[in-house]
Length: 217
Image (spheres, rainbow, N blue to C red):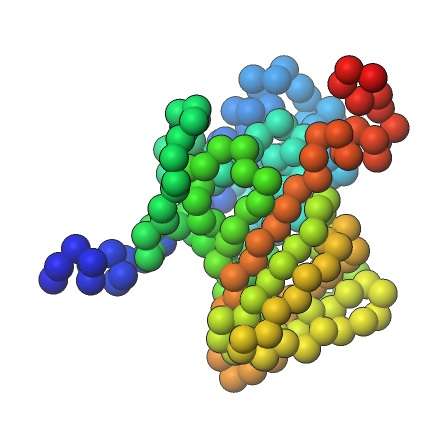
C-alpha cells in the first residue's frame, strides 16, 4: 500500500473528552480562575465545565467555542494533535485526508481541519450529523460569528429557534448568523456529511457587545 492510499484509509486522530478536559482545566488554572469565573465569562454552567474538565461530558460546538473564547484559547490550538503553539509566520497548512482531529459531540462527529494554524478567523470542520430529531430548546446551539455549511452527502434539515427550517440536499449550502439558535438533523437513510466554516467575532466586536472599552479607546 502506497503512502497516498494509506493516508486516505486512515481514520482521523481522535481527541477524546478526557484529553479535551485536561486542556480546558490546564488553561483555566494557568489563568488562575475558578470554575465560577469561567462560567461567568462563558455562560456555560459550572456543572458542565466541571464534568467536561473531568472528561465526563462530550461538549457540543457551542460550549467548546464559548469556553475556548473565555479561556483565551485558539480553537486550532485546543484541537491540535500535541497542543503546541505553531511557529509565527507559518506558511500554508495542509491537512491530509484522514489526518484531521476528530471529536464526538452531542449530535455531531467533528473532524477539525487546519488545526496547526493558529489565530484563524475561521474554523473549518468536516461533520457527520448523528441527530435525527430536535428534542427541545436545549438542542439549539448559539455562538458568536457566522456559519456556512455545504452538504457533501445525505439530506439535512437546519432548524432555527425562530421556527424556520432550511432543507438541504447534497450540493446545497447555507449561510447564517450563528448567534441565532440552530440545530442540525439528518433526515435521509444515511447520516449526512457536511463541511462547515465557522467564524468567531473579532475581539473588538466581542468587547463592544459586552459593553467594554475597546483597546486604545
